[in-house]
Amino acid sequence: MEEFFTSPIRRYFDVELPRQSRGKKRWPLLIALHGYAGDKSSMLRLAKRIANGQMVVISLQGPNQFVLRGPFPRGARRGRRRAKDFRVGFGWGSTYKAAESHALHQLDLQTLIDLAVRRYHGDRRRVFLLGFSQACAYNYRFVFTHPSAVRGAIAVCGGVPGDWNENLRFKPALTHVLHIAATRDVWYSREKNLLFRRQLPRRAASLDFRFYDSTHKFPRAAIPHIRHWIQQHI
Image (cartoon, rainbow, N blue to C red; front, side, top):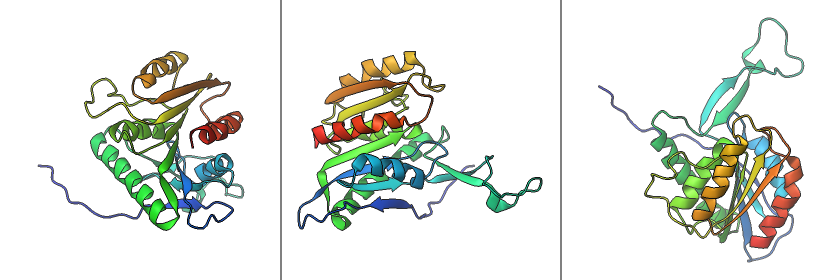
């Protein structure tokens, strides 16, 4: 017989505030989510380059942590490895009780938006989501379940939720979407990406879909366009 109890855990995020104060005026908000095995610090570095000092940036770390096998940090001894020689990665969920991971992610985003408005002078009307890889489908799930919560969503090297056609909670949204695909992505083939390009306009307010010559990693060449796209929709 399976039973359960609930236990509170701390959720960690990094924050980067705009370079200049605007008094009582509010700033657009960029919430960035890393991919599978990533972390908040690496994603913040990318998000900061995109925001360029003109947005409140929050990089949230996934709730599920696990040990990664190499590469080991410089100076680590060969042979017997110490615990501190192993890197830790984070993820957003798996197929095991996936609905619970989806619900936690959506609660996290709602909490961060409220917190940013209250503590960092973020603008609730100008919220942008940035996701890489695994986080993309989670972000799309939030966008099309809460159709007026987000101004824009940027997805990089990711896909739409697997229950795109079956989930009755997904609705057409007021959210504009920028989808960045990689031409040499081992996880998302060209055929899959072309399917996403047909699916997203059915529910997004608008779609800008672009391919970049890259493997499954965040193409740095896309950063200027992402920045420009956000400015267009602010």
